[in-house]
Length: 462
Image 1 (tube, helix red, strand yellow):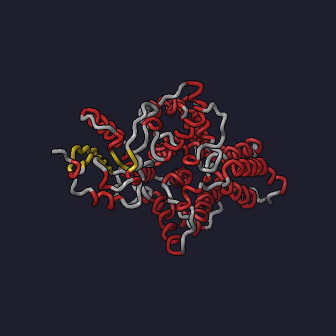
Image 2 (cartoon, one colour):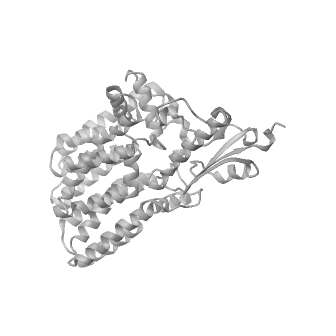
Image 3 (cartoon, one colour):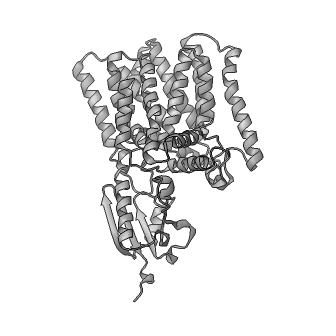
């Protein structure tokens, strides 16, 4: 445990100056709402209400109340989460691999671009990952009270937390039938009663306050049903996400060994159980995500990345040759590291919140702010897109400093705009083309990040 605390604290201290970023910016806004209202209000304003009971935002706000509202305290709030994840991974891994191989498993986890980046960014998906792992271990060890408690908390983290409950339910059924060779008794279904009561109570309360359930009316365009063609594309988006960032090699390695295992028809309970842990949540995610138009993110599959790495270690430990073990272990880590440097054209998803190539963005962002200060350019005169238009009040937890949202006005009416490699808009090329003939006042580059300040030539004063 001490080793896990030290490891977690090291990650936290190295990333202590990194702000709330991407989806975590919303978490900061929610936490600020609870913090400023001293938890007296449960339902947040419409523009930051995502329909679920946001335990993670409550958790961050509670840390602020106790230790102060600072960026360092926010990162330190990750200490119990990261330590808990490493602890759960240690305990779960002992069901599958020999103790001497845990450090290799841990190395794979830390090398995975999504996991380490989410740890640095204070990602709430790690909060969900911890409770999923804790629930899974409680289920295996038949600690059913703890299992039910984890399900309740998962129900109050996000919609994907609710999907996680469905995943665990099907894992539970298959675990009983295929591993324990028993039927799922009706009384065990009572384990899911507390989280069901919690969800129904929250839905009714939230509906009474707002008039809607899980999906905010402000983002209905993300909740539409896909047509057949778009559903087909979404399926391939998911395949791309789970194999992206250097994971293609580990998937190929795993699938070859997995198919070999099936061909030989070996009855290995460990192999079966780990396959259940890997594929059941993935299948549940696919069934839910493919028909819905909501964009699919790399971080949605953190659990699959974890069990895929555990599967790789399970396979590697069975090799007889030490050289073969070292070869495949080295290749997996090398591909993970290389995955941080894969850059696609801007119109495609570049895993900005799940790969370390994002880190130069924060340096470039600060440099641009300093330049604007020396030039006496007011941020209210500048237009840009998410995430650059995030208010520092919520990202860095300091001053009220924010650029204007470029999608609220015609581009030609802006005097200044900032272009960035990181733009979360549907068609960045369209905006870039409109400003192609503008004058570049400042261009900051730290590969693969570029932040560029442009001035509209029609705004010159002669």
